[in-house]
Length: 79
Ligand SMILES: [Cu+2]
Image (cartoon, rainbow, N blue to C red):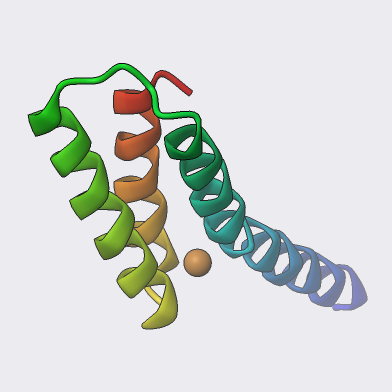
């Protein structure tokens, strides 16, 4: 019984740590955008949309959706 509780607590902590990655991804995207990367306008627009929806998802507690959008934005930026 005790082992199951420890396992559950570990899973909850892992979930929280994963959720905390959204702000880091947003920071990485902002830092990269701050260097004025040489990307096409349509790509930059798409990155901007993904960055915004990622933040909206994060604020709404939908961290999985947030991470997905932010990961796509990072991929477009080559990070
Ligand atoms: Cu989040």
